[in-house]
Structures are given as C-alpha cells and as structure tokens.
Image 1 (cartoon, one colour):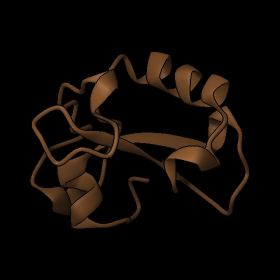
Image 2 (cartoon, one colour; image 1 turned 90 degrees about the vertical axis):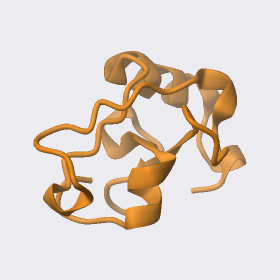
Image 3 (tube, one colour; image 1 turned 180 degrees about the vertical axis):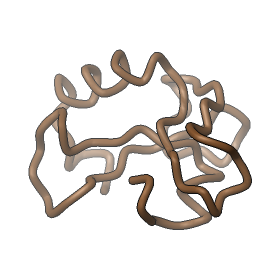
Image 4 (spheres, one colour; image 1 turned 180 degrees about the horizontal axis):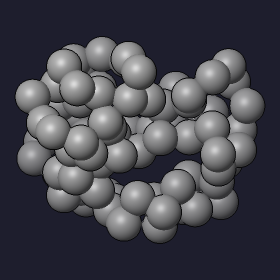
Length: 83
C-alpha cells in the first residue's frame, strides 16, 4: 500500500496498537510468534533498521482492523497467513 493510500488517523491508530513494533506473525519469516522488531515512525518505507510499512489484510478497506504494521524485512519476505 502506498504511503498516501492510508489515512493518517488510521495509520496512527495501527501504529499505537502495534506499540511501534512489527505485527507480523508469519511463521516462515524466521521468528516465532509475532516478530516484534522495533520500528521508527519516521522511517516508513525505509530499508534502514527500524524501517516499516503498512499492509492491508484484505482488499483496500482503509480501516484500523484491516491495517498491519510490519518491518521492512517481513514485508520483503512476503505476505502470508500472519498478515
């Protein structure tokens, strides 16, 4: 999802829910359970440590329940059951 596609209020709500940490639970990404990598709000879309992005779970619905905050490493590894 492109940066401009998610309303900032929804994105901020997802960020708060995630506690500034990756929400990925995809088992094939090399972590058990939730990834929990520490993220930096100012590094959205960055490949640096702390970089992250938002993904939609299903479709393009712009709602808090449909947005997942993931680290760049998990995003690169791809979508799966944990998103």
